[in-house]
Length: 265
Length: 286
Image 1 (tube, chains in turn red, yellow):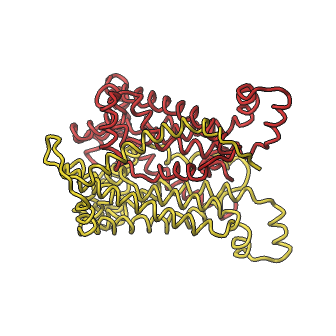
Image 2 (image 1 turned 135 degrees about the vertical axis):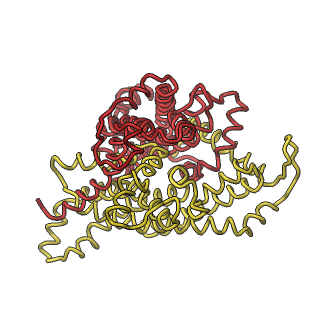
Image 3 (image 1 turned 30 degrees about the vertical axis):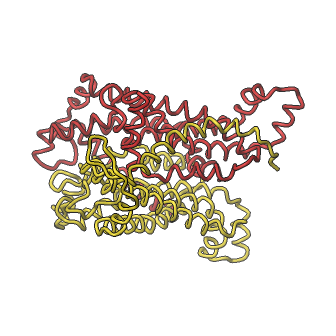
């Protein structure tokens, strides 16, 4: 083994330490956590997980989160597909300005928008619904989706479009039967990124929900403040939020970087 | 060559409507608040630019802004070089590449408040892994809730843990796109490692580095959830970054006017700095 591989090795060790601690904590009893330091769980227990899977406030938190995240992913990708196609194939009045304006929406601190969002979604009667969170997350996910898709689409030669038209395909037929399959990877990566950013964002999700669509994060904060020292339970809940990310990341492992580079590597 | 086609507007219309709904209406609400004074009961009075003046002169804002620039500056200074070094030393092919990529990307997929809670558990003085190690093995007095320096080191370390992988992944993607022939040519010319880095690897990474630095700037400048969960802005006000201060004013004290004025100033600064970064880094492209 070359010596330079020690660098990524130590880096990964550093990344894994806090995660290990969270997971280890989730298998400990509250007593053991508070009584002192132990590197491994002394009395291994699944009680924390059992509580989460049997208490509806807990597991509904996860279901709510997954529902609005999926809804957001579908909306973002569907809306971004034609827009990205337009940006990658045509020039039109104001295209560059529009593209930059989309970028600026990622710069606005979510904290700035929290209160106005609450008022807006209350006014249109969507407060505390899945749709509210899904639509609110479009603010940063649609621009992201447009960039990533545009990057991937620009990699497809324009001749493909022209040949298809010569062969007599209509635009919708061409787009769904020829174009989409050729950027499959791009669509997958985009969906992954929308999923990811909607999954990790919690400030807006928390602001826009009360009971019905409450995300897991809000459930966690409540427990953290009211129960005080139920660290084991908190750790178990935290561990469970890592799992969806860990599963989806496996499918896009070879495209992650390309996605972060907004399709422009 | 792209063809000119104004009908393409119909393709972008849905995006425009959805993003405008989410961006313009709340933004106008903020602008509206920023020029008015309210005493509750939905009674508003015209205030003009008073709030802007007040915020721009307030020492509290200057202090929070200073902390924010210090935080973002340190983050960029640490994460960018570290990310480049790690990317350079990663294996180029084989079984370990996807393993590295997945493990490195993992921190970025953890919800932000869980990141804060996780680091909280990790650094508890007597029962956290890091806290115990520092206090009892190394004998360094480390308590994030008491010592401002410890709190700063902790939030910086947390962000390095959370986001360095973004820089690594982007640089790595730039590096693997370099053809082997470049390296062979360099070897024939007897180029040093530094020369290879400076004239082959760095130019190839330039585009992805631009994106990495921009994203890291925007996200670290707007950071809220993780430090809020971890330190709550304390001890005292030592880790109260801009967003945390803003939320304190807006939701804690319900001073909508000053909070709105502050939001707009905050947004303008982010926009300005991003634009400067963007133009500086893409200057020689065209």
